[in-house]
Amino acid sequence: MQNESLYALLEAALREDIGEGDHSTLSCIPEGKKGRAILKIKQPGILAGMEVARYLFGMMEPGAQFTEYKKDGDGMKAGDSAFEIGASMRTILGGERLVLNCMQRMSGIATLTHTYAEKLKGYHTRLLDTRKTTPNFRLLEKEAVRIGGGINHRMGLYDMIMLKDNHIDYCGGLETAINRAHAYAITRSPQLKIEVETRSLEEVKKVCEIGVGKVFRIMLDNFTPPAVYEAVQLVSGRFETEASGGIHLDTLVSFAETGVDYVSVGGLIHQAQSLDMSLKAGLN
Image (tube, rainbow, N blue to C red):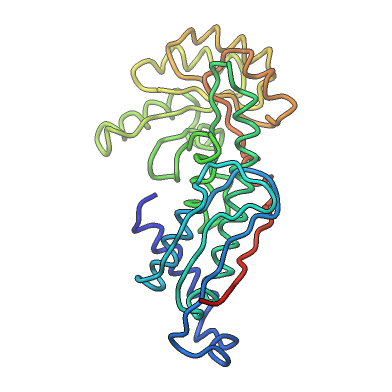
């Protein structure tokens, strides 16, 4: 994660939560009084968000002492401790809920992603996330996917050209859309890669005919596993292939068995359940 992006996300989140002041803390905790707190795990899974917690407390109090007992990507069980923070009590109390919200959400995503990634072990197919993310929280959700063993697809609309069904229909067809996108990339941003969504084997054949040297990946949208297998044979390594749409844990292996390069699963993020944690305070 880029520090600038993480700072902007956390600064906005603190501003949203604290507003004009943390009156609960300001009313009863003397300024400068020091304390410590330990992040306690209450559910098993894959830990994510440690670097976010370290960065946040460092933002709030540069001299804060952050001691980690685990790192991002570690397995965890109920009763484990993830880190200890030593700082002013006002810092700990002001950052407590934001740290918990981030780490609980990220750990839930990392845990679900890990479950998917484990099922793909031994197969050629790799696991992608999607743009089905929470507005203004995408940075951390996608980082959690990476920690859990998945691969980040595009971060947004700005770092890749993906011609989806509506682009193609608005443009008047596959060939026009691909040619326009290729011309745009050459003149505007040559490093932009072009992925094309296909809805049928006929469209896959069409991209194979007109997309060489222009397209780098073909998305197979809502294809059944047998259709994905047929499409992979048609492509024959000329393009990367990605299966997408309705893929879940029960069907994952059937798609991997087709030899497709990638499966993309929006549910890694929007179906993940946050894991329970608490930040328990003590006195120095």
